Structures are given as structure tokens and as C-alpha cells.
Image (cartoon, rainbow, N blue to C red; front, side):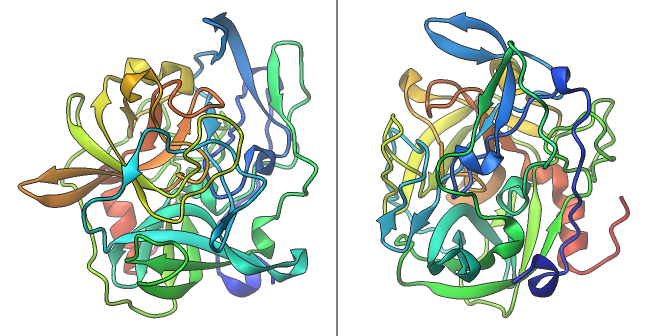
Length: 353
């Protein structure tokens, strides 16, 4: 079913000019790197045998994507939340964003991203989870690392029918399910293209943020407890908990866990995420032990700060600078910086671009 029939989604297709200057996303959704359709990122140097990403305002690094069938891991996922453990606290607001695509033979729901229940009928996730990369991908040059599609053809967003499972640590059963009926993508989202329109954010910025954020409306209110958006952005040194169902192996071997995973880390200075192209209104999370962090399938999943035992949403998983999880720090969209836009969207107020 075309997205125009299932949703009234405000999304746009963006051209990608200045091929030699634009970095392409490989976002961490429930899909794989191939979902980026030959995405490429500019390289600057090699350090310790690891490919590093050139620091550009437009650079967006590797996003994390992973797709899994109900109960089994898909063969087309990339690495994810490594070094975590089964979630030990209640997360009734945690959502597994899943999809079917009958036209592509996918009839059982596949996990693609995480999401958070902020109102009874509203989920917040990352924009790259519910949009497709630009069709006119820049031609590869000698300084560009490209991520080509795998043998399996990616599923376009318009062919997907999204659902969410909310309030269960098990992404295959329990909790509540609801159908996504409307997708609202921040008008500034353009996969990091330098000519992106103005981002809808709390405070105007000299540098336009990436705006990797989207709001999903459900077909009915659910009974699960919602999560509060933090009143202000997380700061370096803040302890946060990361949650997700992404692949928990450090190599390309697909292994999406059925049970929700949790990783304790902290927010670090933006300079640590320079290689991932961090922009304003994003936060940088540490990679504990130099090996642990989110990856494929963790996109859209939350960074949560606990204050006197109360969970506060401070971020949504966006991207990192390397292919493998935990090798480098991870960029999260700073949810509090989009509070007004999220609330306006949730209440159905007009949102100007």
C-alpha cells in the first residue's frame, strides 16, 4: 500500500547536489546498510585500521539499521547494541516499530526501529526510520566509501505498513499493538543535504541541525504509561540508559535479540562525535570500554536520563561514524530541543516549514 494511502505523511524527496561534499546516511533502522541504496561517506584518514569519517557540517556518518522478522533475526541486519544486557527496569513506554510489506512478500511484522510513547496515541522516533534516502545518490569518487545495496532488494517506505508493539520487553509478544496512521517528519529533515530547509527546533541555529526526528500517530490510544520529554537537553557527564532490540554482535552476523537490551553510558562532549557530523540539537553518547554501543535496529531507540527514579527522554538514536557498533561514539537527536515541534505536531497544530 502506498504511503499516501496509509498515511498523510509530510515527507519530501531531496536531491543531493555537491556530490564531493555530502556524506550519506546508513541509519540504524530495522533494515540494513543496503537500505541506504549505495550510501557513501567521505573519508579523511585511517586510524588504527579503522575508517574514519571526514568532519563536515553535512557529514552524517553511518546510521544504524536492522530488520528482523517476528521472533527471528533477519539475514539482512547490521551490527547493533553490543555490550548491553537484558533490560532490568520497566519500560512501558518503549515501542518496537515494525512493518509488513505484502507486495514484497513480508507478511509477518519485522522490527525496524525503536520508538517512545510520549502520549497515548503518539510515538516519537527518528526520521530515517520512516523515510527513504535520496534516489539520486552521488557518484562514488576515490575518496568516497560507498555502502551498496545487498543482494536483497530494499523495501521502500511507501510499501511498508507500520505497526508498533508497546510496553513489552519481548518484541514478538505481549504489551499492546497499534497501527501507525500518520507520519510527520520534521520539515528540516533531508538526510544531511546541505540545502535542507529550515529545521523546526526550539532555538534558531547558525548551523542548521540534521533534524532526524519524526512523530507517528496511532489508530487508537493505548493504555501503557508514557515517558516524559526531559525539560532540557542532556549535558556532558550525564548518565543515560540506552535501550533497543538491535543486533548484539560486534560483526555482521545477524542476531537481533527478542528481549529488550539496555546499556549504561554517559553523554560526552560534542567534539567526540565530530567524525559522525554532530550538529546543534544533538548529543554524543560514549562507547563504554571502546567496544560497546548501539547499531543496526537500535535507531529511534531512546537515551533516557533518570532523575529521582523518573525516566526522562533525552535522545533518539541516529548514527555513528563507523560501520561497527561500539567502535566510536553515537549521535542521538536531542529530543528536548524539539519539544515545541513535537507537541504542536501531536495536537495537530499547523507546523510551518
